[in-house]
Length: 116
Image 1 (spheres, rainbow, N blue to C red):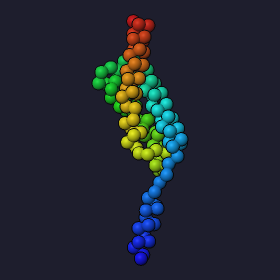
Image 2: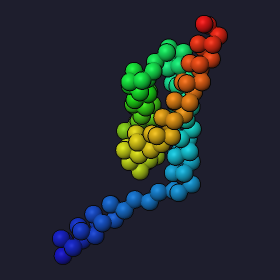
Image 3: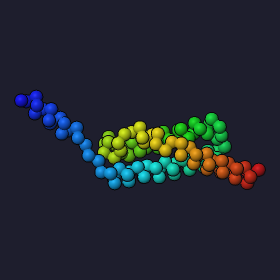
Image 4: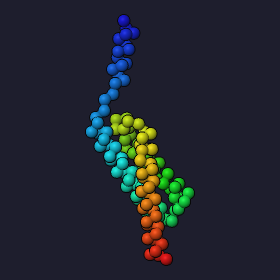
């Protein structure tokens, strides 16, 4: 009898409910941060003249720094705000990369035209 009672208690403890609007809002805020970070790091890479592999490494460093800052801001209760940490790191990686390349290329061209 006690074994049955314990299994029911553990089933109720494992159930977790999420607020869909809150998760959607958190996701949009993270996407906004990621887009802004990609644009700013692309501008920085363009001004510094980081191209090729060094520019890509700079982008990876920026993505990891943003991931770390988001997890630091969420604290130990990151499960309360996000479904998993993996999606924070990999979600929107390629769209951010394209933004990074676009801003970096545009600023590098402008920088070279103005200061050449």
